Structure formats: C-alpha cells, structure tokens
Length: 76
Image (cartoon, rainbow, N blue to C red; front, top):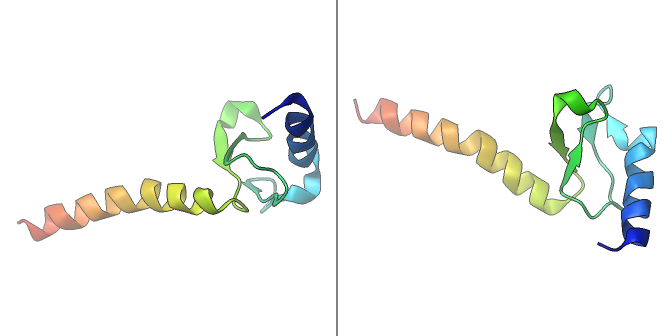
C-alpha cells in the first residue's frame, strides 16, 4: 500500500459513518485493509467487516474453539 492509498484508507477509518454499533464494528467498503486499529487503541484491533476476508477470520476465531469443544464433548 503506497502513501496515497494509506491516506485514503486512513480517511475512511476516521469517518464516523464507517463505525457501527456504537463505534465497535468497522465497515468501510473502500478501505482495502482487513485488520484495523479500534478507535480507542487500548482496545486492540478489529476487522473491516466490508472486506470478504474478515468473515474468514471471524469464522476461524469463533469456529475453531467451538469445534474443538464439540469434539472434546463427543469424545467422552
């Protein structure tokens, strides 16, 4: 990502209209980044839910522990 693209993405990040659910979910179709800092940096990172790869990450982060729990219960 060159400097011009980064500035455009940063402008999307700064736009309050791209933050949903009281500022906790980021949805910006024109921002090419999958992972972005939360508006309050001490809370870490979030995904750009407008990016298709974000849904893969959400499924992996939620799905892996759920699957492992189900497999452990089934093995008893």
